[in-house]
Amino acid sequence: MTVPSSKSVAPDGPAAKPAAATDIHGRLMRRATYASVGVAFTLIVAKFIAWLLTGSVSMLATLVDSMLDAAASLVNLIAVRHALQPADREHRFGHGKAEPLAGLAQAAFIAGSAVFLFVEAGRRLWEPEPIEHGAVGLAVMAFSIALTLALVLFQRQVVRQTASLAIMADSMHYKGDLLANVTVVVAFLLVGNFGWLWADPLLGGAIACYIVVAAVAIVRQSLDQLMDREFPDDERRKIRTVVLDHPEVRAMHDMRTRRSGRTTFIQFHIEMDPQMTLVRAHEVADTVEARVRELYPDAEVLIHQDPEGIEESRPRYS
Image 1 (tube, one colour):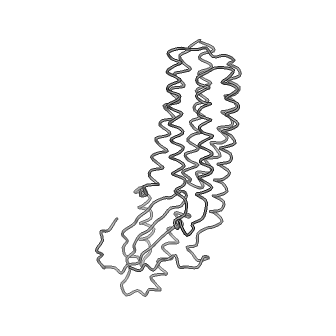
Image 2 (cartoon, one colour; image 1 turned 30 degrees about the vertical axis):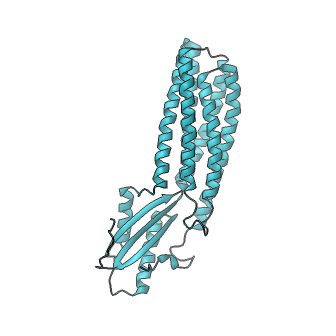
Image 3 (cartoon, one colour; image 1 turned 60 degrees about the horizontal axis):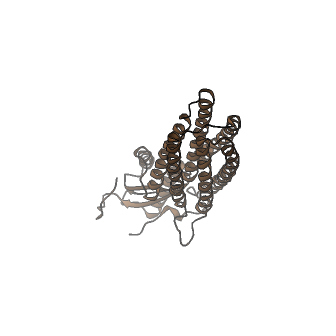
């Protein structure tokens, strides 16, 4: 069945994609990946020196986490660069799924670090060891907390503007780092002031538990995109309300939605007066598409126009 798509309008028409906003989002995402890699390698150097001096398992926990974060951030940088490439002949829907694939890779890195930390924390519980040069460790942790907090705040702003899954997953790493750094400070204070040697491995194990939870959340969101999960019901209701608000749209059906990286895909059928001309039906579809794009500026919207009352052989989706 031929679909008189609203995509046939001129590039400067009402449904044209806001290229300027898209370019800004792309630059923000690239800057976030560069900042992430830079912070990771800076923290690796600082924490490695501190771990050599202190021998703290909590310090080792944050060092391992930062090393894996650096690897994950490099994967993220490559994935974001690929995801930002425009659609081409072989990839008509773009390269957005590079982002959830990167999310799965990051989750694997995180899960691996959690296993290592559980093993090391268990060993230290069985054979407790004192923490040396606690002042050095505290200084490094203060530096790490300040640097990581600045990165997380920047990533939060980027995610708000771009809704990038890859940047969101990377931000989860560094939120975990932030918590881990604070935990290490607590461990240093407890061991240094009270001699509680068991506090260090227990808090290191707690960090590992948090890392596992973060990995599961990243996997879930990545699989949602890879499996083309539908939008939440409240978002679908918003789309339906906007579409049916047009006085010449009498009904709609077969709405399907999905996300691929920072791009959303929305398609549906609208039913109109059977006596309406093809030109007018096209104009109505253009107007409806423009209204939907006000809700989702980066969306690719496909609208099929049906005469009202025509039964279709295939099952309809709400």
